[in-house]
Length: 250
Ligand code: ADP
Ligand code: MG
Image 1 (cartoon, helix red, strand yellow):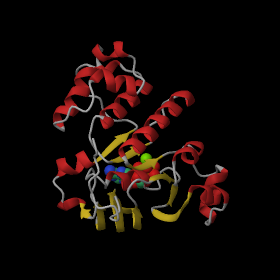
Image 2 (cartoon, protein in one colour):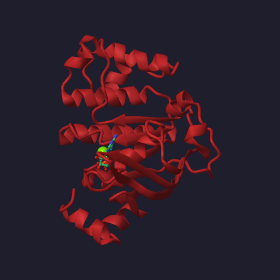
Image 3 (cartoon, rainbow, N blue to C red):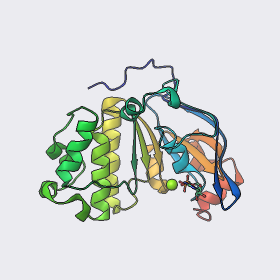
Image 4 (cartoon, rainbow, N blue to C red):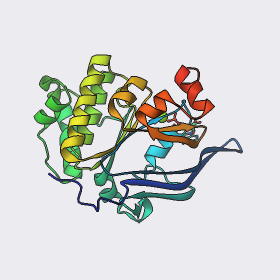
């Protein structure tokens, strides 16, 4: 299925002067400070930066899990708040580290998401096989899965969604290196086959080098650098990026 029928020159994702603050105990914390940047269709962007720099917040604004206090987030040129939320989430789907599993079996979890999106792209068996979940797990209770198995289930649910934009938030953090590589390969294959756009938050620098064509470096709520992957790792422009790459501030 060709998920992407948008005009090619419109960015898949576009942030303009995006700000977000949280109030806590009477104090205001500015988590995103004027983030502006575009991700073109078919790109894989790795979003890097220290813990707490605002990466997850930025990602979760692309499918209305959160909304900006100021500025705009556009998906294929249309502001997220102008989208129908279900349609938006079919278009841009978010997989995250600690995605909750639903009651019922693994199979129930996989069937439900396809029901929600009114699609049947893959059978539960195919999804399990794609993501390296052993087929005998399909009839087990999803709540009994290990951390790594849950990550695979979360990714399987994301792939069951016919989206052309994948928003990935540290999806391999609970996996061993070999499994993480398998998942990377799977995503790259899917991305190429379906011409998807991927915004991929990761703490794993080697993973970023392998998967991304562009790096976004975020520190303290600011998007400090947008660079080609090789350029970012060989010639980071900001002191904060150099410190980060030395491993001091991850
Ligand atoms: P990252 O993904 O880069 O680690 P996050 O986007 O998760 O960063 O968080 C950025 C900052 O916003 C952190 O300091 C975090 O504590 C704060 N934060 C995130 N969500 C909330 C929330 N719902 N309420 C208050 N503070 C939050
Ligand atoms: Mg995060």
